[in-house]
Length: 110
Image 1 (cartoon, rainbow, N blue to C red):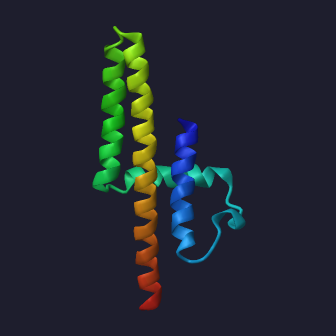
Image 2: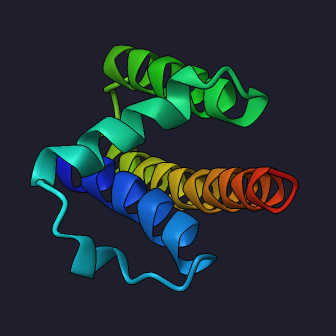
Image 3: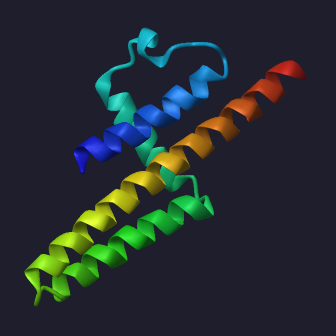
């Protein structure tokens, strides 16, 4: 789970700075920056972020209750993690692009 949080934060920062022609790795951000920017994806009150957060909480609540078939549950948990990774990645790409476009527009009109 920690790796997922790190990747979502890094993806957001990478997408944002690539629009300005800056490599995010050259900025030498501390590691905790990536975790903070993952957190901002889900507190931005966008519908997609709230959807992923509610999906993950409902999913893991239901998976804990239905543990009758271990092999089926293992496959479902694996698929759920893959979907959660994909959805978080897509959310970070979208939010990074929107933030960069917003900041580029405000710079152009300043």
